[in-house]
Length: 325
Ligand code: NAD
Ligand code: UDP
Image (cartoon, rainbow, N blue to C red; front, top):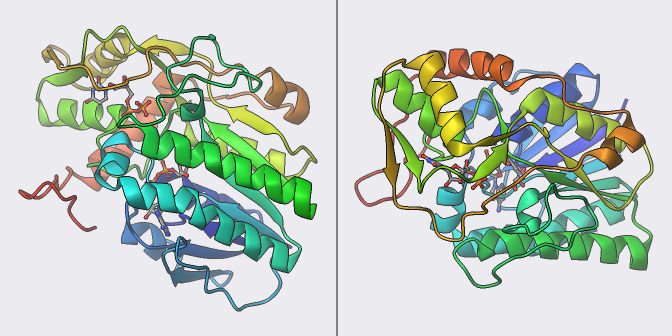
């Protein structure tokens, strides 16, 4: 049995990770400040005998004073472009100070450490698909830079702790992941399209929709995370589904599944929007014997059912600030 601290535990990915770790018999300490998470995701586990929760901003410190930790998994960070662009300074801080605080905690406990990095470190990639040894093509001061550069720094400081302090580290680069418990108002493409279709509204494609993404179901990601914690490898590992779709194809898929006949409208293209994205998962296949198992249509079924049950988004307040959950 392992004692695991998960930052970002009230988020979409964090909550699925907590569920899996508890299911595998571990003790889990969740940490979150609800910047982009949901209190309901903490409440899911509060009665569990092996779950405890600390409400804290990990950029300011990690006030954990319990028994020795075996693993520290650093997943705290806004991840949706509208969220991180609303909170650019907080996003930079959680990637920088937040990562360092989590690394120091792991070092103090002699714990294994993992940081959740992202396909955004490849920026608007000029190599396709993206292997881990591609250095990326990032605008260092554009609207996405608060997230991209924070994650690039997070990888750098993680490797520095590994090289300088001998910390046992893991880095995952997560590609677009979806599933139940995404925040209904997170503004990401899966949540937007599904909720628009459920409401009988037009689906909003930004630009001409020729940009591509590859969508991974959250259970596949969690399986990859657990496998990587069980092997020794310190370089970055892509975790994503290599099935690539244009955004327009994806809009048609959601429309046909959830709201046949609905209109698809084109809005202004998002600034610095990566034009293509698909993971090269050769490394994860060889290292972990891992590959995604859930096809998009199947994962979408489960996601639509969960979104229906969770109800409509509350939406941003009139002042543009996301509603508290
Ligand atoms: P999310 O916004 O649902 O979850 C992030 C969680 O971190 C939230 O609960 C939020 O409140 C918390 N958080 C943010 N700043 C914090 C702080 N300073 N202190 C404590 N808690 C804080 O996002 P997600 O999709 O679950 O993403 C989780 C992680 O995975 C993030 O690090 C993200 O960058 C990474 N990632 C996710 C995806 C994806 O497609 N979901 C893709 C690439 C990388
Ligand atoms: N997108 C879109 N309509 C929406 C939301 C997003 O066309 O309502 C596009 C967005 O421009 C991007 C892709 O969908 O090309 C994925 O966006 P998302 O915000 O989910 O994540 P990203 O991969 O950009 O971080």
